[in-house]
Length: 193
Ligand SMILES: [Zn+2]
Image (cartoon, rainbow, N blue to C red; front, top):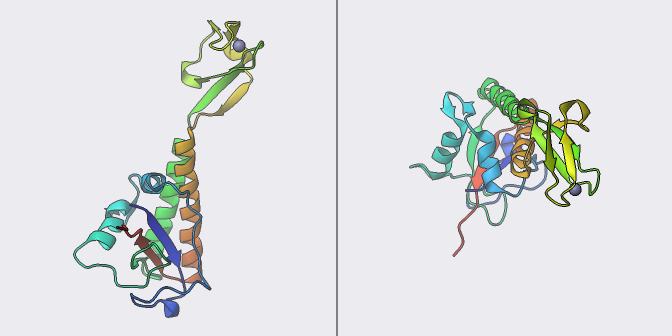
């Protein structure tokens, strides 16, 4: 399910079926992939429960969310975090998201290029050893010599990149909302049809 987070000043929160006002609103720029946003939370906890379980319980639990929707296509909102009482838990969650991002970005690779056709070869640093291969594209020999690589780079696929950018976005958003003293509301996409 696709989550949407917004923060607005407490006195502007309205009840469903009214919509939340669009002015004075803070909203993280999340990647359009639902899976990436769900995955961003991974094992992260909020007040001793998995953040993901808390989101599900708020939106799909026995008591349906009763605050205004953030916009068309989204259902009513529930309070995910309320300052000041949730401030410490939310700051810990922000830290946790950032350390998950650092951990997942941690694997490094050595990179070489075929001198003939420039095809790129990357091997995790831990597995790199001196070996000669035939270029997959042109058949030219390529020396994967760790002493003569083009350098190291982060070995991260585009999906994990989206997960990590969601983590950084959410962490910044949580901190900013708490700094302003605004409640954080969450809603989910309405299933149409
Ligand atoms: Zn080649």
